[in-house]
Length: 134
Image (cartoon, helix red, strand yellow):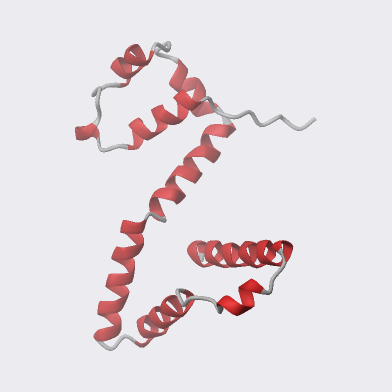
């Protein structure tokens, strides 16, 4: 029988974000103090970390952080600099990125049904995810 995947409680996600912050920026500074401040037993984070839900939530948090606007902007800036320096692959990637940002034709969108629009958006989101993981 397949093990049922349980969700982590919101406090576990707060702990995960605290744990992933820079050690010098953590408030409170230790896990023990964090547990005391949040009213949970000190061994609870270890239990959360053994959960398969922890791994999935961490992957999601890592992905969201990697896909943040600031990180994407840094990559695009570096890509642009490489393209200007003559890197042909960077030029191609930069043009693909810029093309993907072009506004769609409003007339085409206005003519779509809700289902067609939802399908188109799902397809576009899948393309973005595929490029992000490639």
